Amino acid sequence: MNNHADDPPPGFVYRLLALLVYPLWLVHAQLHGRNYALARYVSLRRSRYAGDDLPRIWVHASSVGEVRALGALVNALLARGDQVLFTSFTASGYQAIQRDFGERLVCAVIPIDCTWHCRRFFQSYRIRLALVAETELWPELFYQARRQRIELLLINARLSRKSLRRNRYVRALLGRTLGYFTQILTRNRSDREAFLRLGAKADDIRILGNLKAYSPAAGATPARIVARDYLLLASSHDGEEQNLLAARPAALRDLLLVIAPRHPARSAGLQTLFKQMGLRYAVRSRQQPVEDDSDIYLADTLGELKSLLAHARVVIMGGSFDDTGGHNLIEAASLGCVIVTGPSDSNIRDDIDMLGNGQGVIQVDDADACWQTVASLLEQPERAQALAREARARIARQPDILQAYLDAIMPRL
Image (cartoon, rainbow, N blue to C red; front, side, top):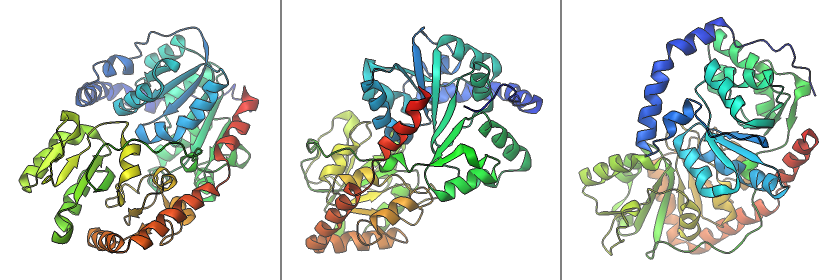
């Protein structure tokens, strides 16, 4: 274990900025909690926890996507008999943890990144190891963790190009925060190089692969929740729905389109969009039935994406027709879905390479090309079936990434 006894604090400038923006954090927490009907969000961000004295492994994931990526790892820790504290930054992530794990662990939201809230967080929980997902770098929180002699591992670690383009002060602050981590368990060579550029030590970085590529053994096919044949637009973002709906050709408008937005809290805005476009729609959260003449089924709920993926004729992956960088293709591929993804791929380049563009997934240049591809796949069911088979076969050939992470973590326990 590296010696972090002399870890430097985040610094006067950062702590002053945190104090100055503190009122804005409170306003954000109030609005964010209201958007997700989570009244407790403000109090959780202010470190008002029930707490306990059980020695726990602290697992942190920013939002829903990271919560899903860490699900198998957390289940493996629970199966060992470990006590787990699972936190998120967002209200939707918190709700996903509650839904997926219930009473099997303690669920919380990380505190506002100010000294007094972070100290109270560690006073509330007895943490023996921290596993932090991807790029969650909160300087004060992790400095206070090190002051408590808590070992920090950054897992499934990645660093965006945007982080490397930050100004000198921000890059220096991120580099200092990385110094609080004993080890960085990252996805691939490009991620390793990015962390090195930010100042991480080569000896502290190990390449283990992307946990999002882990696919458990296939179980029973999830129950069907939409009776009609349908196309699925999954994990879409603001603007993508309008772009894709505007480009949808008349020949495909008789086939139901199910839209499962990345953030269900956008439901009201999407319903307004559908009305403006003259579309007939039903809303899942309102338990409205899909009629024979429904154009759109808005799946504005959490926890049902797997069922929707499993029965879609074609899956269009959102987050790839804007600048998001795409969303995890692995779950859809492991279910044998026919997948089309857009040009924005900074988050899923490895997924596309592993599945094979044109073999287990099809990447297109824009919305028009997306619909042309969908129409072609519907007209050629043999081609669609071959695409789905190849996606599932490539997933089955992947190494056991979950075990690789467990092997790296277990010696720390």
